[in-house]
Image (cartoon, rainbow, N blue to C red; front, side, top):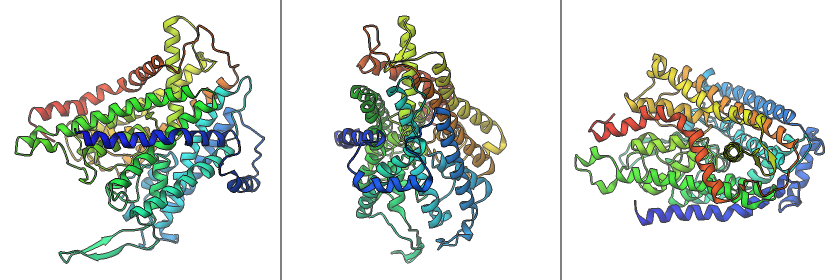
Length: 569
């Protein structure tokens, strides 16, 4: 660990925080229907979409109608994408002549992109045609992120409104999130990426002759546009198999900075927009503080573990000052690799600029744990906000039990109905992650895909299902996931992690929006103060993390002690 390393980390986080307020205020205007900076240009386009689709902006939906809109839209996107991937060889813009995907891989990939996970059991540059990348995957990068934003806005309105049953209109929220937020930002970031050297082309791969005289196939394609929305929409994935470690996806230190800022900016600004919309900016900053405190701690833990390095290498003459550079790009170093790993797993992004399976055991433990906490640091676009609010509801309930009062959050009473739905949402992750991991760790069709035996092999399986159910998409590496068992079960985990969480959230919103918003009294527990920030962090760690401790103890924790004893895997 070094001062220059921490300075790099600080500069990225400061730049992100500087964007939070202006971007958050802009998004608050967008989703309250106020005139904004882009209204003169995009307003007619928005109204044109509504006219073509037959959407009435004055007709709002109850939580059930909103949920049905989300589910039907996502199901349609899944079917269309699945068909496109299966029939890829018959469709245009396939200059490499790639074949269609197998049924299980197409199912996995369609589930992955529709749920904003972007888990990839394939090499993008050797599997996907340009049409599949652009019309299939990139479109889902936009609309799956917009779906998460829409649900977050529906829950936000539940705290703003009183005594009604409508949460807004899903089709309006989806359109505005895509048209006013994601698309303009993606254009700006994509142009910046092109200027930094990322390819943007419809050409096929070309063959180059190396200095040694060997022939090398260089893959190219519409990289910059997919990279931009991948980060802004916290989608993850990548055009290339090695993701943001590839020089065509992430060529320089400056592109690395932009990658991280793009990942964080929209998710953090949405939390600020929540505070603006509910009439309490301090509440927004309190939730942002929770996220960034835990993000900085997670980054520091990874940075320390990787700087400390592997004593087994020190024993054979490797300079301990180098730390652990395995699986990392020298152009990024340990500090920016640590920050990238923490950000991509604290959000539901999943892009990587270093191989997580090559981190030290404790260094690999942290990214896995950040996903298991529910990815609320500040989480995926939209999904991070509503995940934070679920934990906030649980926190005020615990606080109410401590003082013997009916808990309330932002003037809304939290009662048995809301708690049942909140616990249903929180428990879906451990059920899916631990259930599938247990089966895969003892069955031959699961263990046969492990590259490294012992505790590291368990970590490979545990990380895969953690990433899938958490809608993250990053991988520990080493696990051969492109098999019928893993493609199918990881796809199911993605769908449950997205929609079995999302529906209870909307049910909570439907319950809260019907309640009157009470004014704060002397007995109200303030939720915009440091005390609540500390309580919320504790609830996230206890309810979101401790249930995974036994599995982690058998994986990365025991691997760390075995490493100290002189054995590697």
